[in-house]
Length: 83
Image (cartoon, rainbow, N blue to C red; front, top):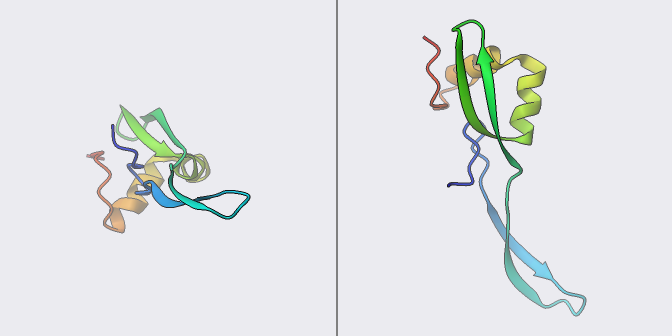
């Protein structure tokens, strides 16, 4: 299962663990992904998405339909058809 947000495109990044003695070893920073189901009343369908916490906050603020429309206008492929 890929660790990528379907709407924002957030993905794991790499960095360093830094010990007390300042030794650096590689590590991964994973995004805070949640699997969430939404009902889109404008189309009458349920969609299941894997989203970052930031995307969930944006959906709560704007609404799922408005947020998907905004992403569609900016050219982001969401995998959800709004027809």
